[in-house]
Figure 1 (cartoon, rainbow, N blue to C red):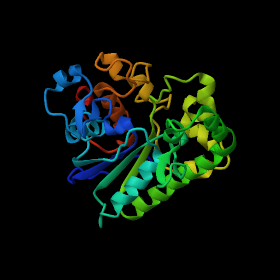
Figure 2: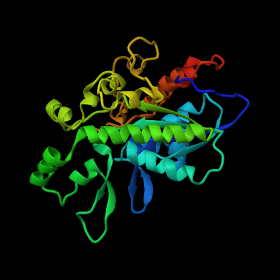
Figure 3: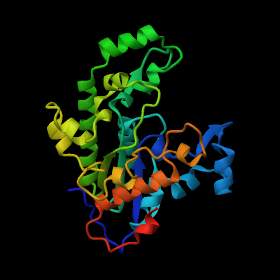
Figure 4: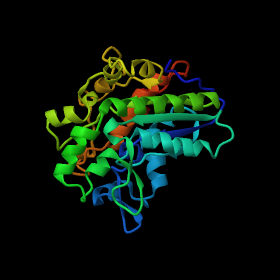
Length: 295
């Protein structure tokens, strides 16, 4: 069941986790130990100080979603460039600080398994937690080593199993503690610099129209995937399918608004549309709302 059990007389804390699309990196850059607007066009549009709190509470899909369910606090655990296993770790750390999460809703933006965490022991003297994609794109890693790693050490089936079992473990913890959790695959995912063949080699799921079905058809993880509360933003048989909401273009970007040329992150409109699709999927007993205000 994907519908949330919402008491309209109660206030909720919305915890969002994911990558840069959740963090709100499309709007900002981190330079000189401070956040700045990514471009003058964005700075002029919002005409206020650039802070993570402003972005989280006004521009992200969490901010847009919080207008339509009773949310009084947003916790943004998004982290640019990292994946779902990182999100799981950060939520676990967050849960350690809470004695009661009956008023919490967790929504997790799912990523490619190519962003799973690994322990990087190559750059001594310190071992660090790294994501696979970050590790392979470090300047110290040459092309030969990168290819050897992908050919001999990167076992996709293993990473898929870890990925989904970690999510199911987290979902069970949150549910047992009284919270609610839903997950969704990002439907706008793009690999702008890779060929179709290279994309297939990295993660076939992100060429699939229905990613949940793609993973369910993999025998080693199908039962785990079926047990997860995955919101289906890409179903072709619903009027609130994300593709339909976006007029067939499932990649809303800031570039479309001419604010950040060649940027592939969600614009404010894109965040609104994702929130709208999430809302339709989790909404079963809410009162009618004004469609126009969702954008």
